[in-house]
Image 1 (cartoon, rainbow, N blue to C red):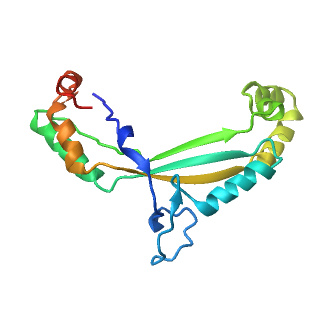
Image 2: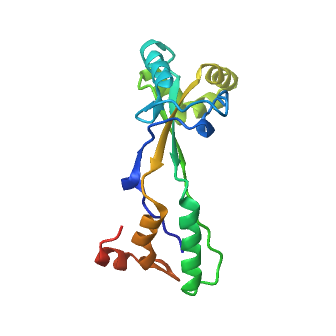
Image 3: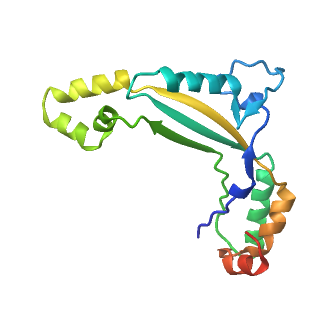
Length: 184
């Protein structure tokens, strides 16, 4: 069996940078945390604004990396494993917390839509000389502008566990028990 538990109602923007989440890795370990605006560092927002206003490359894209932090998730995972085993499940129990999402935002221009449409590379492959030109051009022009946004789960492990513990069984998550008790 397989089930997913939704944490979206407890996800909030991180307010301060965490050195361990730095993508560049150039911060000193004792560097003070910096304030974030909507989960994004001010310098990164300025770079994004400059990119959006001045970049003329139609094949450039913004890659939004959503990083979610929940230090207590391993406690919840351990409790879930133990509860399912206690209820009589004999198999392997794997609990994951997916904390990173990547979303690519591309420009909506005619040229960008043509070059990235799934049928255009096939047409280029059908012509002998088109394929090398296409791949060279795309590798040269397709650039990414990464933006890291930081979020955190704003619920304590004990509080979350109290919401889900009664609905766990040997067959997974009992949705009818969750809806009758008002859990999520």
